[in-house]
Image (cartoon, rainbow, N blue to C red; front, side, top):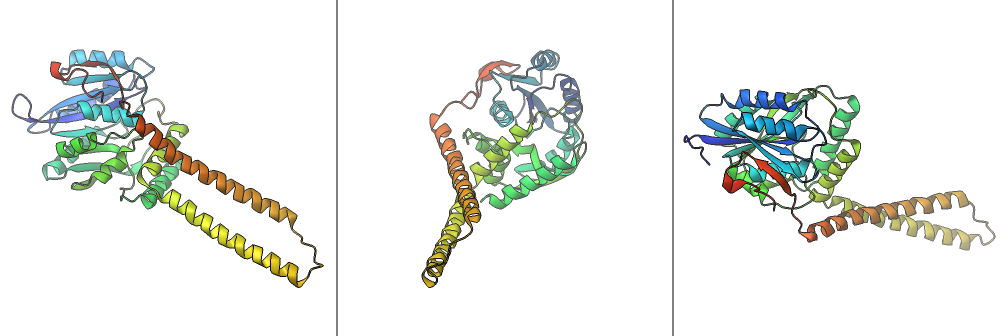
Length: 326
């Protein structure tokens, strides 16, 4: 929608967690980029995901100084993907950019994204060609995950991308209509379709502090991505079970024939038999656990709870205070 002076509005959504020291720098760099974009007004929607530090106090100060700063504070920590969703619900721009608060994704790239949007692209996503300040293990594991998920998913997923992207209003509204609880927004955006393109950039080292994505959170994000966008793990488990069954049947025939041909033969190899039993038992338990992961997703989705709860909001028009709790 247009701003009061007739310009189109660009919304920038920034999920916030554990970044008290970074926020003033994030606000300054975003403002420096956004204020010089031609024929556009802007708003910056900070979503405080119940940050344990003084981030909310800093955000209140920024909102008091800058009327373009909007604040949504969630009642508890709902997670990064939900925080992005809350920001998308509250953003009112003709286009919406999502970017993390740690300045690893350079705000200056937004100008190029806007150019692609003006050319008619509905989704413009940032593609990382370099990841500064990250160890070889994190780079390697990230590359492996993106390629594994792309292979498993029925929806083609762009490689080496994160949550730094621009969405046209139509694409943003389409994404908002998807209310599943187990959210992998990168895959959800790829599923939307529309005319999409990539903007390549070098990801900077974190401005300060440590990353908020622990190994546990990364594993959960990977699990949500795989389970939400692919049924191949279930199919592969079934096919593997069929192969093992055939092998077991052939091996059983071999033992019967061998015993009939030489009734005095003493069967050997108890150690190998035990190992085979343990191996098959492990495969069965793993398959049951995999099935349980899919069933658990169904269980949570049937509850139909709100994705998040807003505890306070600042600098929104009166009609939008508390917006986006569904």
